Amino acid sequence: MSQHNRRTQRGGGRGRARGRGGAPANGGPRSPQQAEGRRAAVLSGPVVLGSVVTVGELADAIGVSPIDVIKTLMARGIMASINQQVDFETAASVAEEFGIEVEEHVPEVVQQADQDIETRRDEGDDPGAVPRPPVVTIMGHVDHGKTKLLDAIRQTNVAAGEAGGITQHIGAYQVEVQGRKITFLDTPGHEAFTAMRARGAQVTDIAVLVVAADDGVMPQTREAISHARAADVPLIVALNKIDLPAANPDRVKQQLAEVGVIPEEYGGDVPVVEISAKERLGIDDLLEMILLVADLQELKANPNKPAIGVIIEAKVDRGRGPVATALIQSGTLKVRDVVVVGATWGRVRAMVDDRGRRVRRAEPAMPVEILGLLDVPEAGDILQAVEDEKTARTLAEERARQRRAEAFTETRVVKLDDAFAQLEEGETRELRVVLKADVQGSLEAIQGTLAKLNEESESVGVSVVHAGTGAISESDVNLAVASNAIIVGFNVRPDAAAKRAADAAGVDIRFYDIIYQLVDDIKSAMSGLLSPEVRQVTDGYAEVRQTFRLPSREVAAGLYVLDGKATRNSRVRVLRNGAVIYDGVVSSLKRFKDDVREVQAGYECGLVVEGLTDIQVGDQIEFYHTEQVARTL
Ligand SMILES: Nc1nc2c(ncn2[C@@H]2O[C@H](COP(=O)(O)OP(=O)(O)OP(=O)(O)O)[C@@H](O)[C@H]2O)c(=O)[nH]1
Image (cartoon, rainbow, N blue to C red; front, side):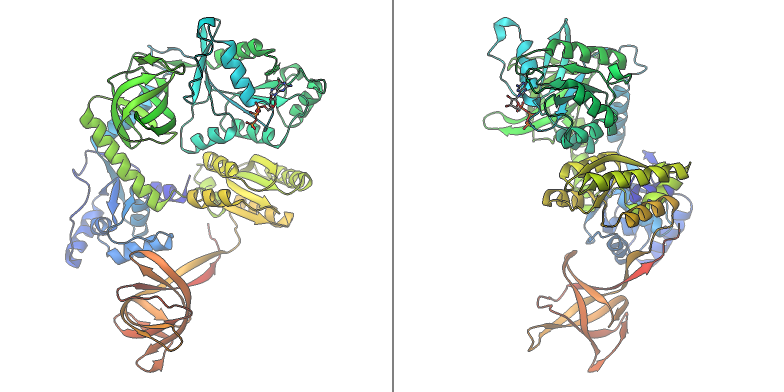
């Protein structure tokens, strides 16, 4: 869990105040006295905030000056202006900094919708729940035959009359075996699977791992195993290409056992079915095995209630408008139902199944294309049938607002620095790691050492969610997000896509080239004694009141120090409308004609920053320095 969440909880902020305090805070006090009044009021109980608030509203509500709120946000790397909206988690963590407890006011309709999703999904005690088809994802190494297998399954199980007319690709399809249905997700590979999971949606009940019998366990085979394990989804191995003379099933089973996937015939719990997707051999055996594994899971859903589902694909279709494929998880979706889907909504105008047929109803585990949404949702969005259009619109608008605020503040994921604190609160009993190294030898050495660390401590541990060789990929980042893990690279770097994804999701990636340093850091994280953290400390803020061009083409700025102090030995950031437009070193700080070391708030001064040529009246200057802080936990 992120540091934000942790802070929020400590501040008691996560509690949802049902109808409490009426409307979310806004239009609060402006004068210092009023703010004091509000601060006093705070003592009598938590301040109630909306799920999304502007920086100004937050400042008013907690009785703190907007500039202090902006500074606190900045210390977290969030550059906000007074009108910027932030999500509740962020607001709560700012409030906590000032010792103020806040509570989230969630509109009743949203609360009910959230509750509804939970109760509708919880089929455990539902007396109306009946067995439902399993949902299967096919994974495996490149060229081991995932696509061929999906095609073979689809074609083998189409009633004779329908052959040829089933090429509709909607992202998933269903087949019938012994009068029972099985749903297959049509995008093979673990990337899509984990990307969905990273977004909070888990639809897969069973993973079929395709391994070519002539090639054996390969890097992506291992990745797929880690991804399925991390999601706690049972595996079935489809040993493919047994038609080839080079096929060596025994060798592959041996390899599987070596990576911890123990075939049933070796006394393990992973079924292995030998198949040839090309020759269509063993396909029925595989399908029967899927049903068997599904039976053990006792998958159930109640079809007699309004639908809940997950979007697995969506696009705009010329002529048909937004089209989304939903996999229904519980309840039944009907034509004319009003649905909220992520941040959009609509009335279902028509539904099309995987064979291109119009249908009027979609039951649990059935994929359908739906028409009638106002906008294109995202894969992983939840679909929920609701009572009426008004409810749908309110919910969609609220979610859209929430998403904008969240996108702005970004969700921060686990940082190594936070790891111990989480352990301490009992949220995470283990530090999860995605480990990538340049060669197998180093990987094994690191894993061996980490395994020893685990033996040393009973209360905390390190768990390697995935270990592999090669560059850090986007798929590694998604896995880290989905499993709340950090990424450790030994002599490897992320590729560009992975770097972007990690930055966007706030995933911590650590690089090492010496094994003992890597192990030391992890050990420190586990024991809470981390090496010093480099922290940025803000010295003050100033506003640009005048500018002058110098012969050097640099620009001197006449400043008014608003807060703290301007210092000669600082670095500065130039902020325009909340965005950092320059970051550099002070080359001169003057008061009248004299060079000075610092200038206090309330005074004017002149500033030149090395290399800075673009500065305007109204820009804000943040003076800051970095320092090493020993971590005390
Ligand atoms: N001999 C033989 N060839 C097969 C079998 N299954 C797949 N192939 C061949 O293996 C190659 C790869 O098959 P695909 O189904 O495209 O493999 P994939 O795993 O989907 O590959 P990517 O989509 O690239 O990850 C193709 O040339 C197939 O014809 C099989 O059972 N026997």
